[in-house]
Length: 164
Image (cartoon, rainbow, N blue to C red):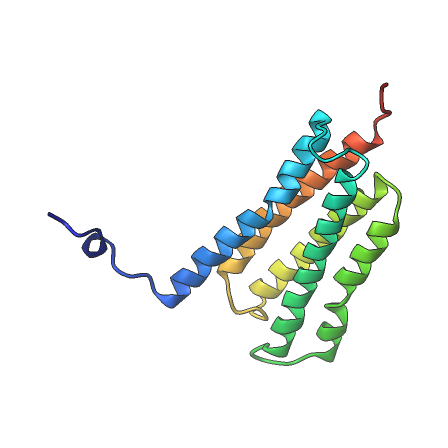
């Protein structure tokens, strides 16, 4: 009889962090993907006038969260601490707020663009060593790609005339 614990050595704290980040990150895509799907098929689970706003609001919250990650990273940069980086890290939240105020489909297009810009900034900082978790780059690329694809689907569908 074999004990499963003996077959798999315990994960290091770093491995646990990477695994948790992936699980939480992929879980965070559920509202984007499910929302885009429900909007694309015209589902009435959540009334259509409300569902796009629900997804748009969620995307704005995610952008604010990503800006917060950069704020924290700026406070802990290994080689320098930059007030400029702190100031720039609030821009995703402001841009998200502006996107929420835009009419559809531009609100979704704007959110997608800001997510891409934020992703490029994050991956660049990781490659420069300003964010010291190299595995975070792959996670950001995957999460950004899926969220942006979902927002593009919503933008496309919401730009189509509604047939009655």
